[in-house]
Length: 487
Image 1 (spheres, rainbow, N blue to C red):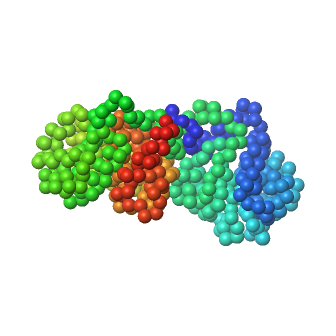
Image 2: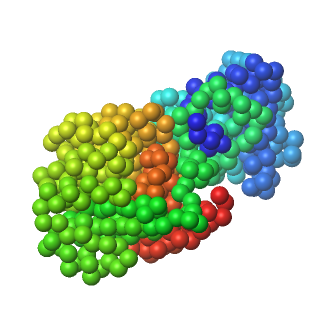
């Protein structure tokens, strides 16, 4: 089981965490008090006293809102509370905290926003599983033009499990409890959450042993202990030998991938290419070896070298029968293999042949277009990535600003550190190479893919604006140095 510090919980799992905590002796009213108080504390830390409109819904999110209103009022803030529906219809802990609010309430109409300097969205939170529309959506649209919004749990209109967001408006700050939910990281919902703060409300981490979360936010804590460590008595072969298939004409992609593999720690990295491309690769690469091949038989012979511990094909390979044959030859070795770009597109007319050929450790790294050529593109990103991993038997890295890494056993990791500067030609080739470099050193595919995605994002983040793909491999040593200092 992965470290649960970075676990992401579905709405049902969070409900179960609450239930287990209540069953162990913490009253629901106490949990709600802690939740609302934590939101009030975050508001007081971030803003000076001002006029606040607290928008309360008909469920527990609304109950949290009443607690926020009470704590802010006790701190001397000017608080106006608007309620969706009759206040006396609230139930349980929400009704309890509504009774503790001694101030006035008003119907949830635009009038409650008058002169507000801050707005607290406590309408629906994670309890909503449909698009937000009607008067509430209209009210929130007005609220977004009125003042900064603080959302409790998730902004109303965000679907916490899938990352969908229909009718939601952007919050400046979202305060959630115990653990984040997938919607805090998945797009488009992530854009609506603003800064996300996770508050401790006294739910013991031990409840996760019974919940067994399967989704996690990408963080070194998940894979740092499995990362390849240099040995004092090692040599270049013990550090692994990475082999990259290099195509002709689009040679830059394979060169970027090879440099990514080498910088990720592979002891040897080789690019194999058609003889006609030898001059291009040999001139551009120094520490990376180049192996020209005359025909497919010579490639199969090269693959028989058992010192080769990781394989990559796709970047600049070209779409066609030769790439298909080379993919199948790589997969037949049973060695860790990364398939990217053209290696995936070459099977768009016959994905079943590709799936049937995957039996050893394998990582597929599609972007959305390549994914749709092989797998069902329907459903939210987390759902379809998991389904693709199950179907293929491979680890799937569905790339994007919210990259999802999924294993065939159902585990999934959502990455959140990728800056927009990574949207540049060739950055995906470098990522495929980093994955290859870690696989060649013996790292388990699911964790290797997650580590590579995080390193890729962190390298780009440290560079800042002006990034191009060629920069990424040379940024890895600094990132790895920081990482090794923590192991």
